[in-house]
Amino acid sequence: MKQGLLTSITLLFCLISFAQSADLDKENFKVSYVKLPTKPILDDTKRTYSTNNRGISISGFSKVKSEGTLDYNYTFNGTEIGEVNINKNKIEKKDKEGKVVSVRYEYMVVVTYSSSGSLSLNNAETAENFQKTYSESTTYKSSTFSSYTKAKDYYNNNRNNLRNKYRSAHKSTIISNINTYTNRAYGYIPYTTEYEYLWILGSKKHPEFQKHHEAFDKVKAAFDNIKYDEPIDEIKKEMEPIIEYFNSVIPNYPGDKRKLRKVRYASYYNIANLYYYLEMPEKVKEYAQKIIDNNYDKKDGKYFINKADKLIKSLEINKTNTRHMKVLTEDLSNVPDEEEETETADVELNKAYLITKENDTTLVDIKSSDIASIGYKLKTVEYDQNGTPIGSRVKSAKKCKELVFVDGLHYRNIKFKESSIKSGAVDAGQMVLGGATDKLCKVLFESDKINLYLFNQSELVILPAGSEKGKSTMGAGFVFGFKKNLTKYAEGCPTVIEKVANKEYKNNQESLLKFCDELTKCSSTPAQDGN
Image 1: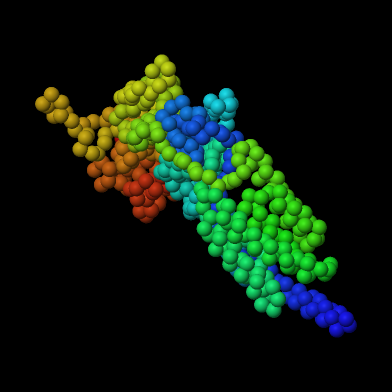
Image 2: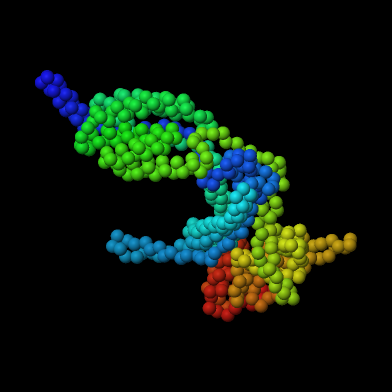
């Protein structure tokens, strides 16, 4: 009798000793199931949807051309450009004593792009009508530049690319957010690559180490074979001895010592987690309560109770007892891709105010693809009485005085003689000498002394204040008389004239912008007409 008692006491002390090395490791295993919707269409024959945007999709539904049970209408409202700021940052270089030895400035373009879209939903099954607005905003910060002019020039030359970049990114994000909401509410989403874990003893000194790992290996092998669209009855049978083993460990480690409670916690946690993926939420709650009562990590017990309650509710709403089922997602709309993408969905329209020679002001829409061709003519979108685009309207540059885009892009009618071969024209069999004609030019720089414009994306035009005609910087007279022309424009401003003499200006956009900027800042009298 005494010998038996001694043996039991010895065994107890051994267990307590082993429990001191009860380190736990997370061991991952794969789970597979179907995420059930919060607003299910229970009749699977009615799981159809229609939409005007091919980016919208619902898992477990069939896409039809029109009149789906769920009908989505999506509108992208466009991208707005906020105030463009060029931030100035002072950079000081100091010596070892902390004395400032040099100062320079960096300039950075900062601008915010904001996009929005709206979604309307009609649910024919429940008569639900839903409307939601989505928005995205991004603040763009450029790299730094050594001058204000360079920063401004960079933005002016890249404004369309930047807007298109963020417009595209915002559209993708909005559609992604729509799909997330739609599938959470109605979709049946297969989860096939998600992983969970069990707490498995990590110390080889522990007497349960080997059995813990053998149990986990069986769990991992069994769950690797689970398919989201197949029943799990056989897996439940395979898990019975595993759960029985973890239960058998619990009474072997009684007491309130932390590391004893830790061993029991591992069993409670593992059993609760297995029951959750075996779709037995009531058993999950039972072992979640044991986790709480064990007082090792109460928050995990509360976590499992919350998960189990959500699962119970989800199964009730969906009138099922399983998350393993066939999921059919198909496209029955039979609409070729090129027909789905309508012009209004693909083509970005840019709003601008057109001012005619008669000083009439009209708000017009211009396709992004037509901006580059602004020059001799202007192409705007024409609408019918219902506001539907029906084509384009072409207006001659001769009739246009100014074009100001809402985002800040600016064109002005400038009369000048271009240097290209088009400066001469053949009309009715007779050669007509090319002269100064009206052309819409992009505004690069304007002041009360000098103006600089860009025509046809390649030809710079200088227009001194007070002059009626501009001068192409590609013309032979300007190229061969470059210093002479700039000196005349800079009359009365010796500092700029000196820079011209020292060949500090070149015949390119960046250098001529610098010339215009420095001439404008000169406190002397305005330049005279150079024509």
